[in-house]
Image (cartoon, rainbow, N blue to C red; front, side, top):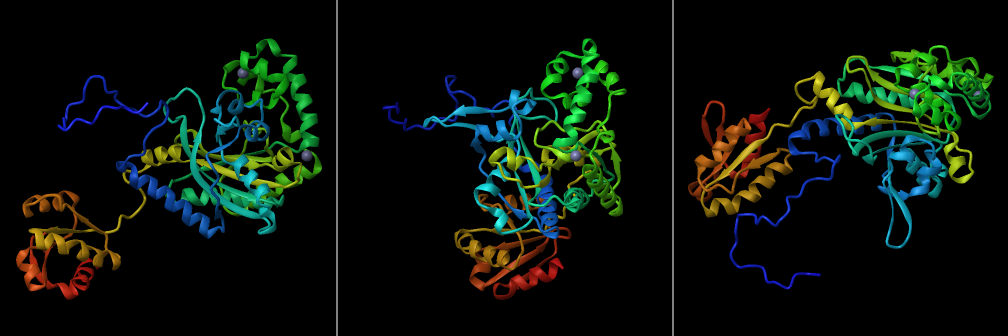
Length: 437
Ligand SMILES: [Zn+2]
Ligand SMILES: [Zn+2]
């Protein structure tokens, strides 16, 4: 019920004890202005890479039908089993906050028949994902991903293209050396026989497995390969590896991908234990690793069965996703400032009512000429305003006072030397541009 009390006339700056302090939801953080440089650097590197590689924007809703992920990502995966934010709307629909981007992109592809417009369709996305898990360093409940997807073609050239684009994005960010860990997990045919071999191997050693692995063994034996428990890791050493069981056509596909990756000078390492925890993957799976950080910054693979699982259609596809927070925190460890040049800004100061009135229009003139302008017009005195200019370390300040308005001029002050000149307002933009060159 809305309060019937009238708001009190007197404004108090004190917060009454009964008013709660709001904080962001646990595991979900704010991206603050002080982080701007890093986020902009990532975003621009992504946009630039997408443009150069011909990937186009797709943006899907944050809420999707819950069963899109239950079916697509897989009911026995950690993501769906433990980490999804699922709820019913007032209308009774079961929806989920998206835990990843690929299932949504495929849903959009099928819903809008995007295959008719481009074959293959090459898209990128950028946005928040949600997974309910124990928040810890580098693992938030809301995090952001950048993704590349190529939908509608099974050719190994697209597996390589997705890996190339992902690596190009990191190169654009001057990330330093990264390595692609890569594996093939086969197709329906060859994976099934490998699955049996793997199950038999682990069944015979079930007593040594951890609790999680014992539970996963029947439903999803591949997951046993990336268990971090010491006993399970030791057992893995002797376990059969899929490369020995790939069918002819999967084998040829994998070889082609490796050849293309190698030919393009991408450092890679075959990793027979890499399986990725999502059900929709087949054939190529990969992760982009930072040897210095010892962790994966991106991951992806082929998902030829996803469209079939969702709508019974055969649409081969491949994609990758980069964890943006993780990439940024890795970059921060590798370099002191974001790998991005900030444009040079000028400061605009105005003193007196007339000058203040005129200043907005004058600032717009500069902006229209491509010069970013900052101000502190809320401060009355020139001294106060120039103090801000000093703090911002701008090279130039423009000062408009009563006298200047009257004369149709403006003072151009060099903030380093303190030297000043007067320019006519008619041509002050040219003067500024010349000085910034
Ligand atoms: Zn196969
Ligand atoms: Zn285990």
